Length: 519
Image 1 (spheres, rainbow, N blue to C red):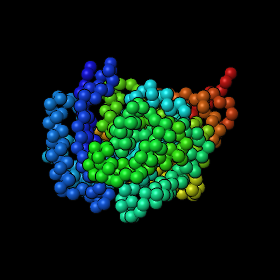
Image 2: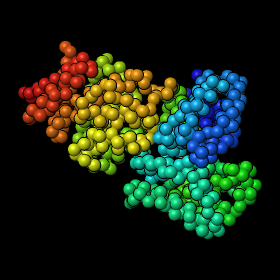
Image 3: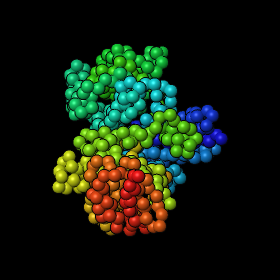
Image 4: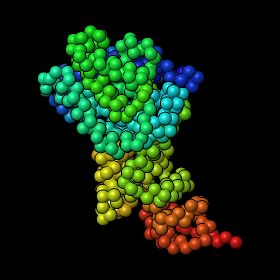
């Protein structure tokens, strides 16, 4: 089966649409790419909103995109807005204008979703991606408003952090100073280092980084230089330093001519090169891989994976779990207890499929909530649940939307607080194509996940993993937890009974612990 799909990126610096053919035999193949340069980011980051003039321009371009989609007989599409649209105060008005005038529904995605989608685009280059991340690898995604640094080691995501250091922000700061090239470079170094100092101490210390994967629109512009393309899609750190030296003395007019771009785009080339150069120095990476992927490629990869049209060898859900576990370690959580509770929670979830009606995505959110359920104790033992809520809401977990992060934060909060339906209010609302329930049903989803977390936590009340051998079975209106542990389980029995009322209220099934004595 071949499906024609359109991916639209409403970005900070340009509108782009990719037309793709997707099939299980040939994978994801680009058949056309159209783009239009537009300074949304400049409008948003300077004025805080998108001007009516730019709204008019966006609508005209998207109307053209709609006609192109019709010409290609596109069967499905996705249109995502990123940092500029996220930051605009009038984004809801702009999105409604786009919908009414073009028929295209644009979904504004969180930063963590945006960067995760970019990772999926890289992973579409399956063999190369799997090979390169076996050694210490940093994915550096420099955008117009911010940059994301994600560290991989032996196929596992170690950490990911978003830093407020995009090329537009850097250019804006540099425009306020009039300095010679040497002083300008020192200013850039200080700005970059200031943002990276904490990240370097926490994540780069004693970690060997061999490879740097460079993604983002600015690096694609850099890569268009013919002398780089000759070397393929990889270059050594030394080769990039040579390129940087060639750029640092050039005026915007010279860069405009060299790269065949307009003045607006030419002005971001040197700031982008400066950020990548400093990242190479700080990480000590020897090789820089520029896979040449764009946001639209990531949207197509995400769609193909969700619709099961292609299958990646890399497990992205594991990346999300790895990120949450690393957060738990950072806040000194009891990891052996977390592992025991996670196993129990997933057992309960799987045993109750006929009763909870939840999907795989909610199962993943449950795992994350288990991993983070005690992180608030790092700050205080007294109001740990409130602290945990605030810590989770203040932390971007790669791959999760804002509303998904709110769900996790609320489940952790109500794990030890009285649950009241009328007090659960999510600030963000899921979009129409979300994998989650309708907004009005989300408090009930939170209640279900909370009930499961409470029960799983009570199954290891002593933190000694007494019930690791247990079996779960629903019969006669009870969730029977059977264990052959021959020691004392009084603490677990009392805790399960205590949590049983809320669990029964939610699922109509009462948890009961039965100890089967060995013969």
